[in-house]
Length: 223
Image (cartoon, rainbow, N blue to C red; front, side):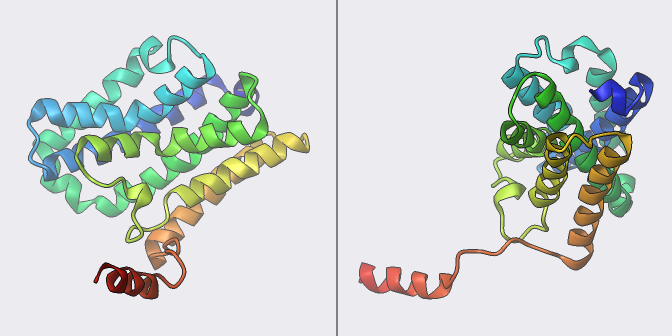
């Protein structure tokens, strides 16, 4: 199905772009955490490939694509080297990195959902793995860096929600037999634009209702 949506060369190029940008974000976090060159490379690789590896292992696509295509493995190393030597300059173009990261999020949530469906998963499970493909690397990055994953923090702009929207659009198109290059592109764009809007207007998911009073009750109960 993926080859019907994108030609293999286009799919490969888009994958490498997404992998590169995700790797940049991992390498930058490693620099902020004062990791050495090996730590920078590991965090770049994990961020770029973690979501896809998880998806491929779960659906039985063995060996995973990251180990059958040398470009997938080398690209994060190139990004790590770039950040290692030029991280002050990369930090200055963080806005541009965020834009490409949003594009990678949109692309991977769509391709991950489609690939999971191709391997026989149901629509809901396919959407879940599409989400995992898009955000899994970031979760692993934060765990290795000893941080609460950005995905779970209320003070971070929406990240998972755009991926959920993109994956949901894909499974709805599959359900109604309307998935093609146009509709899949619309799903990518929807996730991409929603993420950019979240960054621009600082949209965040709501926290628990009446949270302040619940905390007060806990304090009084403790006394």
